Length: 339
Ligand code: NAP
Ligand code: GDD
Image (cartoon, rainbow, N blue to C red; front, side, top):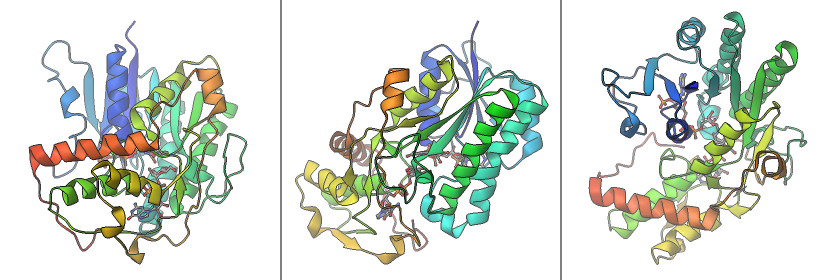
């Protein structure tokens, strides 16, 4: 029997890699996409086959995680075996600008989906994209047992989603799990997250198209892993015979400054000549250090992190250099680009 999965957030970094993984395993994959005035499917266009042609396994459906009745009709129509809930306003800095919207999508979006599953009596397994941001000010290393101390509207909304996922597991017996993922990056990372902002700038500086890069706090410490490996962990969680929550991380700590240095060194440049400070990239409250302990995922799921931060920086710089050579798109500094 072909398994059927629904992915919310399929157009994002993780959604695109997860769709690839599930298609490679023979799944029929359905994705929720937002109607926009421009195309927003660039990360999954290479996977799409016209549904009129035989062999199509990827199906896209309009909808929005703020629209509860749409989630009911979609789940009733698709009747997936596995639901991967990745859709969210996922930018921490932006969550300070749009706290209510972030609560509505990143927080309430999850209960809308869980309620839709419950209301139609759907027998499925549910994955919630929880985040290391929930740990916030709790000192590292952080594990499944570490208490949460969120430091942003985004982190607080993810804590809400974490707990309602657990509650639906305990209250209704739903196979619902939280993957508590630490930062994971790739060439498909959104352009305003720090890693991709840096690697795009390095490519442009190397090509002589840019001569400075403005950043905020270089002292923050993160545990950056490789997104294609992290989506494998999501899938493994839903294949296990017991529903429980897992930290997914590499366990290695690097500062933003380290990442910047790796990226510039990869093309033989001294970062200190190009990087400037701009306080508009600071957050009202910062998360100083996130370093995960992935022992449970390694032991129970057999998952292992393979790509670590120095190699990740090289992969991303190489990809941005190639993209610049093939696309040559001029990068415009935008006044409103304040993330
Ligand atoms: P991303 O690239 O920002 O993708 C977010 C996805 O959510 C996009 O497909 C976006 O659609 C969709 N979305 C946003 N608002 C929506 C709405 N109102 N209705 C429907 N869809 C909506 O994020 P990501 O890095 O892939 O992360 C995936 C999930 O994991 C997110 O929930 C994120 O918070 C969480 N997470 C990420 C990390 C990480 O380091 N990447 C770590 C821990 C947890 P558009 O393409 O139309 O914008
Ligand atoms: N975005 C950004 N831009 N961050 C900067 C900059 C800058 O110019 N300069 C310094 N930073 C610092 C931030 O202050 C933060 O400490 C760190 O770089 C990482 O920022 P982001 O890449 O924006 O990621 P994040 O850690 O805030 O959030 C990401 O990881 C979470 C998991 O821990 C997102 O992917 C979240 O969705 C995810 O849950």
